[in-house]
Length: 502
Image (cartoon, rainbow, N blue to C red):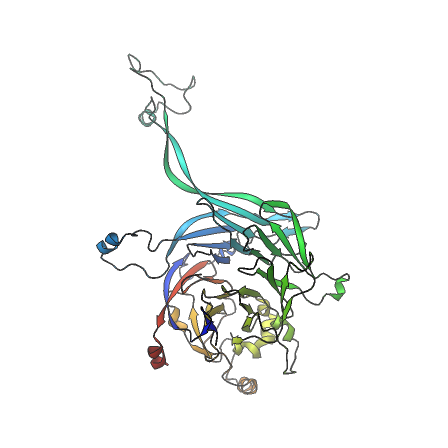
């Protein structure tokens, strides 16, 4: 069992998931524009703000609104409806973070697509965040500013405009006429602050440090530095210095023909500013300590599960590649996602994960088809709950799966990104229901086709749930289905009631 909060072992509560909100919902049959597809999601540490990035280079910010309108008890008592018990968000602002570029030296087009968004520490009521495309990281400041207007004029400009007297600036070119007898008195105009608007400003641009596509950025717990990682290198930056970075990991061989693995994801430890982890295409996770040396070419720990089955195939290394890693909030666990599974690692045990969750085992017989349509290279993200008791990841047909971090349970809750998430719900075992040999037999008999899973539910490779994020303090999830952002929340089910439902 996974330790609960205070270190004691316990059974995590069962969760009943419900739909909360949707932003950017499209009508049936409406075509989705490529630039509107969401490519990154991130909650800030407080859970009060949510950011998304899309393929058009835009960053959209949302703010939490539940519980903010009635903070006093007497105000809550006056309400004729119960206060919301789950996070609710509203649109806050958006801005264009990246534009398409062209590298003339390499004859390379650089897309504006946002690969990652990361929140930084807030200061003086302003929001700070990092966003990156394939080559450039930008540091943004978003702050409320009052819009000032000039009032109490000597001339009633609105009345004059209605009479057609003011067509431009006051001067010789206008037909403005003084009233008979002139103005009785003149006074100075007054500048008055009206409504406030959120104004984004790019404070720093961190460019020209990566030869390959950036796949990860991660903030350090010291609040001063962050890392950016591409296929072969990880660079360390100071937030206030944009023209210099330090290369701390370099896996590029002298001869590129000797290249056997690439970096796929990297993340700082949530509390230890000198520790970070990065994953590779070989299915390994390396933990490095920056206190050991300037160039961290030696790892402090290596997390790798040895393949003892002996049944290797052409696809073994492809599906072993880790697409995403996340530290638990406690800093003791690492969650990794490869193509077929989620694995939960304990930092004190390198030999094997403490739990392995099968995400879509029914696709194993279809690996040839997945390879031909390139779906086998899809990069799914993963996330942990704030208490590290639950994990989640996406799959095809806009489905996502939520697992309890308890080795005694072999079931996942499967939900669909829609207003009715339970419509496609099935209790999917962590282990395949049937053996691979029986699957092969049934396929030969024609009992299975490419678009039906082991439970008889149709699935679609063109709709995939790649990006999702777990709220840091509540059981709430944000996930992206094409251009739509869905939010869900969960309520605890008493153990006796959960047992009776099973």
